[in-house]
Length: 439
Image (cartoon, one colour):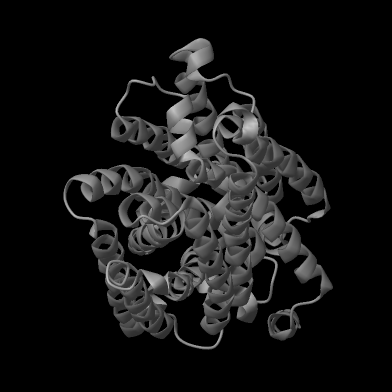
């Protein structure tokens, strides 16, 4: 009788409660992701205000990216701790806590005094706020994927993860739109005085709103069932050690996929507007408008690829999607010098190509069993993102300025080619990497 009930549950379509869970999780994730990445859209202004005026622009920008990177480098610690308690005591509690840890420092960044006011204490306070944000986002993204995957039917996990990743991308879109609006309304001294502060203050308020909305979320049925049958001995184990001991191949593949994801999001979506201004000569308004279209393409594509994961083999989707990304991203970067007028065509297509990353979460949540799923996804995602996401802006900024303007293109195209290789590996032996309770 239990098997029949489980089978019927797995065959059902998404119901009202599923959509409510997805909506609240995606909205909260969007607002939290907005809080984390709005920093990069105003990095030029922040670099000008939080470091000495006589410092060379390139050095100021490197230090600004260094503070941005700090938020990524601290993520594994926050992610591992939050995932540990999430695996032991429940997904919902950590899922809600992460919002608070993001909203408060975001609000405070918008109120910080600048270098002119308090000297070197200004960048130090900014660094502290970024570290707090990194702790929060370390638990948010893996927690969100785990949360929705354990709520929906098994044959709708791909769609759910795709929608959620689109929701996270919506946070980037929100950041791009607000950045565009701020740049339209403020300029010069008014931007430096208080215009740049508005996005952070608004983000902090949004974060507290998202925390309130998440009160209506329920604990995942899979976690509740696991808790009922879990022995006290199991509770005492450290989930992340079990992940590394028993699920190392899945961890390695998840880290490689995260590296590819970080390249697509960081370089093509977040860093490209500054690249278009500094290296190609587009105005801030043109770059942000094109970026908005690229993010819309990313949002559409994440949902599409997520849905495809429920219908086709993981490896096939990775291979086709990664090759499409290689072509569209290559066309975007390599056409800028000869055909810059095509920006509003090639950039949205590149954004759509990057959207294959919306399917990566599907593999990650299915690679680890329920007992350590949150910890497995969190460790893999945050460790890879801390290294790749943290160092990529800094290194590519240096290489682009000093060596080759097309360094970002070579970097991203190479990594999405790796995505196709991973697809081949999974196509040959997919079931070796999928947890039994999700197979």
